[in-house]
Length: 325
Figure 1 (spheres, one colour):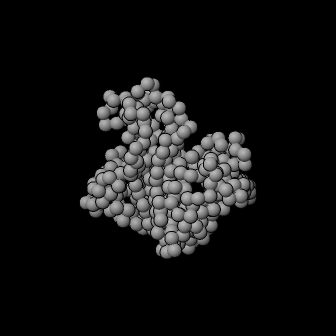
Figure 2 (cartoon, helix red, strand yellow; figure 1 turned 60 degrees about the horizontal axis):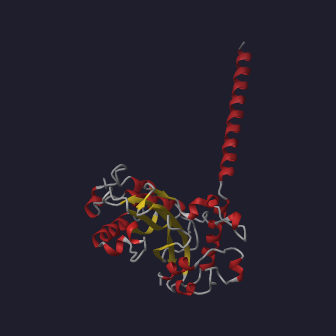
Figure 3 (tube, one colour; figure 1 turned 135 degrees about the vertical axis):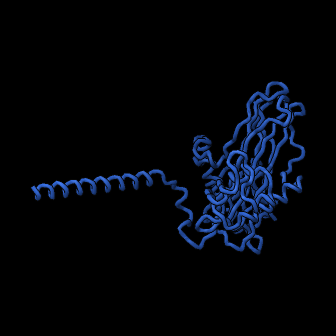
């Protein structure tokens, strides 16, 4: 009887070991299937490498007078970061671009400014927040605010930045998650640039505004050492002099991946995110001002090698980058 019990116990142990091994292998396979092959090109396994990232929260909102259906605001809250191997902030640049649109004035953009340019108090508080989160990771930054109100719960932060930080924290968290070792060094200067324009691809009843974003690091020679570039294409539907659509969020071109749908109509059969990645590599080592030339009448690069990888209209993207120096 004793031998029988020992044999039974041994058999159960072997079955459990087999099941554990099978579960472990299944988990490994699942992880391999969900690995993004684009990430394999980054040197993220280097513990000494500095990582550059860009986070964007973009949405359309009703104006302060919610009953005025002729007005909408498109708001982009954006964060550029550099981080270390553990995802801790080395430096951060945060800003917000707001497009105040009035259907009664033809929806022309006459004076596009970031909030930081026009509101000194907002800029002062956000500068304090940028400094405060230095050395922190996503979890520590999340813990600084109340999830529902966006207000600081950390007393020291509250003393220097008593404002709604909800979207700012979301953008920073996204930037940390998107950060990769793209060639920056810790002594490089981090730049965040934004610009907006009304697209010619829209129509009288479906207007499109494009917002360009650039997170750049520059060395002491003013050369680009790393970059993360993106765009928001914000479409709004009109019915006469009123907006017909409801407020909501926009996904950026890069985050859409294959859902953007450029590949099937592209002469080089590459998606938007693939093409902008090629341009990010191309501009590394160049000075921002050098990128203002070298495009044909459609905005496509005249560099033959780059043209095999990127046929995007780069004029506005390059113009935005050129503001860095």
